[in-house]
Length: 272
View 1 (cartoon, helix red, strand yellow):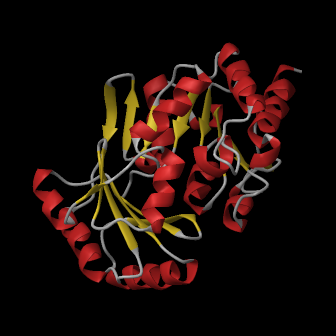
View 2 (view 1 turned 90 degrees about the horizontal axis):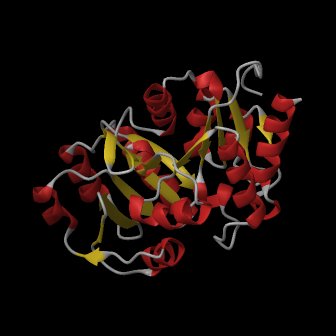
């Protein structure tokens, strides 16, 4: 457990990771989770979807939940409420160029900016990511995309051992970016001070509440700072060791509606 949980303050914000958390391993939204999120919204809790996905890949889940609330995409680099952007931070172009130069052939690189997804070649990794998100990338030289603006994030995909080696290489370069694992096979390269914890605090300020009034639920290393920043941090039973160590409570796994279990556990306890 990372902190002593004070449940005296009423919950006003629920921040939800999507893949491995809100969705099951088949990337479907369990009806129990949908009902629990709607229950929280009916209790006056603001729902924030907070994912490394691009905004257009979060939109179908938001529609399926059918509750209003801000959306934090690219791991927190872009936060929108309706059509209003309340936060927008990009990667330094020189850091992106360094990553492109250093990436070995066995790493699949994706570059994301707003609703655009670019890859240099089609491969099994971006094909699988496309199947998960329902999106398809444009194939283009990634260096050429930088003239149109800095990206919100880079995604590196590959075998876990290859990602381990590339992660170590980038750490030695000390680039002005954050390096975060969202899966064993995924390395997310994000702008600094634009992660999920910062996104939670930004949404709290937007709502005029304190972070102790927020509950966050996630499953992997990329969620650790988020779980620590929230008043109640919940890790999924399928979560990484780091996520579970950062959490205040461990929910059932994502194939057993862990989000619903967390919502009802904490909100009904609060009502008691």
